[in-house]
Image 1 (cartoon, one colour):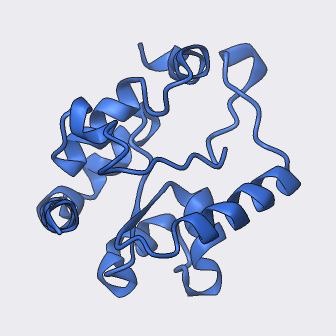
Image 2 (cartoon, rainbow, N blue to C red):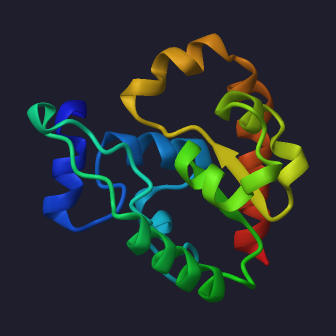
Length: 156
């Protein structure tokens, strides 16, 4: 159920253990077993997520100092990684900074400019279904390249 996705992940303690995670795995061309195999995929959630609304059952955004500490630690841990997915505009703003385009759509559309190290993606939540319908290039151009990069990185 989309509406309780954040709550589902919070209770399970497993990142991307919801419908958004299923969509993300489809985008990557990975099954759950491969996605959660720590020898292949590192998942680093910073809390750059949609903070939700109390009445809607959403979570609360991480405090800025906590995000900064996590991001700093992650930068050191993942410095040798060959591919980092920036899922959602909060992560893109943090990691891309001044090289991010004016909008998330423009940033994702310019994904090739950030390769090979980064690939910016929209968040795969139900809130972005309309965005994906308005931007068919995402499935035609970006997803095949994303899957190709994922296969390449996991092989070597």
